[in-house]
Image 1: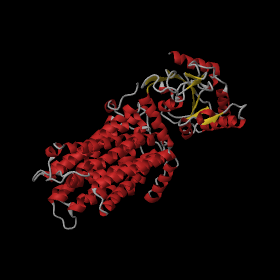
Image 2 (image 1 turned 60 degrees about the horizontal axis):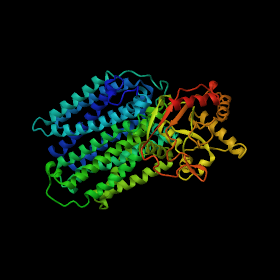
Image 3 (image 1 turned 45 degrees about the vertical axis):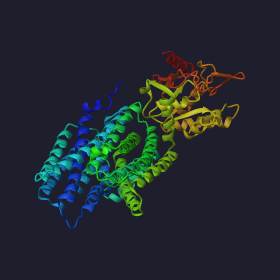
Image 4 (image 1 turned 60 degrees about the vertical axis):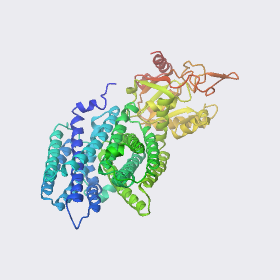
Length: 635
């Protein structure tokens, strides 16, 4: 690995100051909001703002700017230099916190409500520039790890902000003053750290700002909708915020009414949730081989549903007792199951969300990236509002809190399944991820030669029925395959390759129309700037040796050159697959058969993929390409 891991990024100027800037901002948001909520609920008596409504009003005021100003903030982040925007936002935070400090010290609730709205504006301005900054400074191999660090840092900051805010405001006599000092100090620290974030190139300097938030919001949503995978990923992220908001909003009532714990038990639930999200976010880099691996998204969705349902089963029949503190709560074995469910539920939510954020950043054009992220923030806010309304309606019709968790978990399974059917790429990558982690021990070398963007042809030896699946697992991008038409008749694999939009090809003598259609489709793939994979041997080897390469690749290159494209060809070699269950090693009635004897080599077979240096189109000949692949097999 010649790129730093996610923790090493903290020591680099391009990431470290940015990480701590956003960490301070998230911590300050939550310290301020929670301390304000506690003060209104427990320390002030207001006839016009009851304690029951205080949390809802504060939350709504904080979310409102996301709906009103996200479209504008996305335009500003695309048009202006991002470091300049971040420094302005952090300076604005200092001004807001100075006003809030006066509000805390004087106990002036209207002032603090106004500051709540302004802190929401601060976060609205920071969001698009935050997520559009990362793909400018991180490579594709660093993007998942960087997003995992940001997601982990955000939830740790939320947790610390809530805990510190609650502790400070509860100090007799000096609590409001101490909160005021902490808020201003965090804002100042964030601004000082932001000074060390390096400047980046402006992505859309000629953009004309549309100050109408309604028309610009609609324009941004249409812009995102133009890229199907990006838009569906935005919906998936928004659904995760819907899902998480249901649980987070119910923690106080769940702790008191169902678990029979005091306020400290509610805080413990928040701690478990935050630890889970942080752990899942950090695991993404390890489980993805440091690529943007959206195969983790279905895994995350499955885990979210499984542990939401088990949380219902674990908590539906707990006996009513006197309110317990943390020690008494943790002394009950039944409560450990509840905490583990919450931990794993949120861990899988981290696995679900981080690859989606990275995918949006990777697949969005740089000139429009911040506006697309702004559109995502708008959708997130709308989904969170709908989640609050849904939870309120379910409570009105006498759903218990465990039943709300069950309903949310089952709905998650339906929604996730629908998204994955709409965008099969998620399921395909999930299958590839499972195959490369749990059927084989898959090692890839030289994958830096697979281009992150632009058209290219991948040429690989053909050993088994799962070769294409393993190539999917190794590539940071979707691949379109040209494959023998007969493989589409194989159960399961045929369906899988149809979902992958593989291109069937038949011999010209057998089906001239299918033969020509395959080359026309291949030319279209390259014109669109995508990856095209071929198996130049023309079929799966029957004896484990490398077969003669056919001339089809020359026809593909000729058509590409006729379209003005000079496409590199990347040689690849799959190793140690011969003899596995999916290779044609078994002799049945004198014919080489695959999938005849399960576990003939045990489980977790060690297989590999070696990727060679790209060949320029002018140097490619079938025998030259075959020699390159043969050399990789012997390496």
